[in-house]
Amino acid sequence: MPLNDLVAPNAILPALKVNSKKQAIQELAARAAKLTGQSERGIFETLLQREKLGSTGIGHGIAIPHGKLVRLDKLFGLFARLDRPVDFEALDGQPVDLVFVLLAPESAGADHLKALARIARLLRDPDIARKLRESRDAEALYAVLTLPPTQAA
Image (tube, rainbow, N blue to C red; front, side):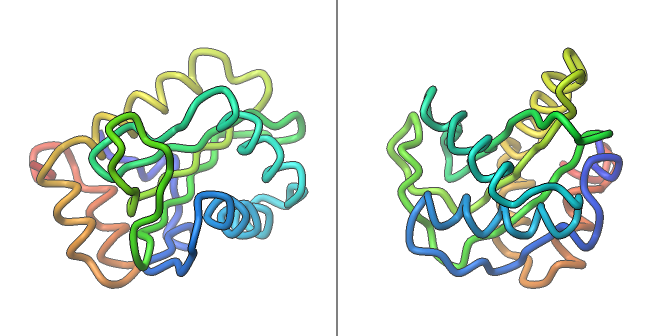
């Protein structure tokens, strides 16, 4: 299930340097704002509010911060491989180094949940996660994220 409909090549950060979960969310919100034309503060606050409900760290070094924005017109994804893992208060206690931000229109409903499930399934695949951790540049990361399912495994 390739993610090329959710993430563009310019929405890949191959070595984001951050020291904390909050800083990671801040940097990702800033990049998402540039790419979507949305308010950086609005994106940051949306993602932070979601984290307050419970960590989006799903385990195995992976986090999927997400939220809905009123003025967004389509699903938007942003992927970052962190320069070094940070504590994301993940369910398994592991620090996170792979982060996929998903932003959805307020009206997205089931599409938002389907996209979250697709992202989680892909990133939880041990081979995909390994390839993402081994890839050093945005092009290689994008290629792994958008591989057709038969080649991804």
